[in-house]
Amino acid sequence: MKKALFIIVITILIILSGLLLWLRYGVDQEHIQSILAEALGPEYVVEINSARVSPLQLAVSIGQMSISSSIDSRIIFRTDTLHIFGVNPRLIFRENIILSKVKMDTFTIDWDTSRSTGEEESSDDTSVKKLEIQSLDLINGTIIVREEGRESKRMNTLNLKAGFSFEFMAEPDSLNSPQHRIAIDSLGFLFSGDRYRFSLSGFDFEHQDSLLTLSSMKLTPVGGYFQFMSSLEYAANMFEMEITNFTASGIDPAAYRNQKIIKARSLDFDAFSIHVAKDKQLPGKPDKENPTLINKSMQKLPFAIQLDSLFFRNTNIQYSEQHEEGTRPGTISFMNSTVQLRDVNSLSSSPAKLIAVTYLQNHSELNTKLNFTLNDGPFHMTGSGNLQPFDLRELNSIFMDLEGIEVVSGYAHEFDFYFEMNDDTSSGKMQLVYENLKIELIDKDDYHISFTGSIKSSITNNIILKSENLADYDNEIRTGDIDHVRNPESPFFQNLWHSLRSGIYDIVF
Figure 1: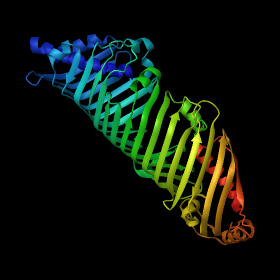
Figure 2: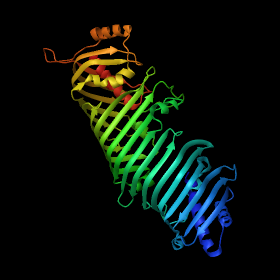
Figure 3: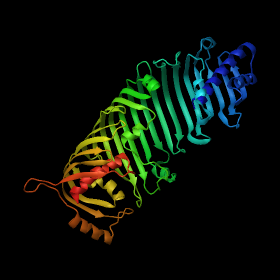
Figure 4: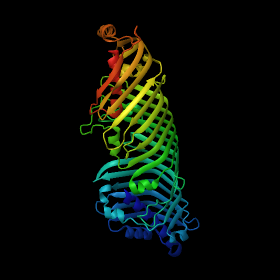
């Protein structure tokens, strides 16, 4: 992909050179096409349908341009129109390219990563000291990435309005990072088979002050839950996310450039929402790898992470799951949350620390503290939390559709827990003080209580279920043991819930 971008930069350079030659000798599109083909070499075929130069505006317009492989005739780059404005010939001779505007309409970049070799990547030297485009306008683009001929990634209907400045390093081995600035007014595209739409606005990064700001970023499933799930062949999580007013300070670009470490002092989210959903009616992908714990997943990333602190305000987290025999997904939510994370370091054995205040089902305050390791050693987590008084009927939004259980009555006065997780094994203690718990076994489809279900409900309420856990005459209450071994197919947060659930079941049943 890097070489594909290099080809585009070379293309712009040649077009600019053609403009200068035209100003002096009257060069037309055939000359520009010939110069570009010679510069790219025999591996590529260049075709330009039209070219128009405006000397007074220092601009050039190209129509119907394509670059294809001479080996298999596959088009690598194509655009209906390419307009370049504000060319300064004096700066080009100083190896500085500063343009007032570049506009490209209806374009395609189609690159096979297997075509790139180490020698090709290392030889990509444009001899340019500085590249600046004050206004970059890309309209209706398609970007395709292939691996050995097979399409692996695609972005459709890409639109971008941005500006950037990039200074190239004179000495490639220097520890200093090149100076750069990127400002994106808007960016949007479709991906994952057009199932998702990604959009971003108000992005600004300035290398000198190591500050990144973002007004808005959204990830939206096109058509919503049911359309997304109907487009899948195998079970997969659906994600819906929105970030508003994000700031990252103390960013160290040199750490990534030289050591492949994403490093920053603080990340601040003024508002953050995420909704994850899964339909268990879909079959699992046969060759899908089992999920791993947080530290193992982080170690698989192509970079390390070192973040001093993350602060999330106005955070809403929802998880929905549709049962194999259910009609609707059941949803559990943690709303109006404030989350603080510190010492997130995948290279250190010191644990990351999380403190969260949230409202379970947007109803009762839940306070949680977690410490967990992120390095490549054994995973270790400790956690504690407590829930303020809670009407247990608020859990029906998940129990009715997932478990076929309706909580008819019940009130929790206290809920406290402490647990420890060592790799796949969880242990700990739980205290749940509640009263007047009563449930009904219902049909997941229409919530109807059948005659058989009524009998089962009566047996459950009167024989199996403990309807209350209040202090007895010795002022003692039942406590539950958290005792759970992770199923290899369970993702981390499901495993965390099942660990806590084991303590609840130990008290209630």
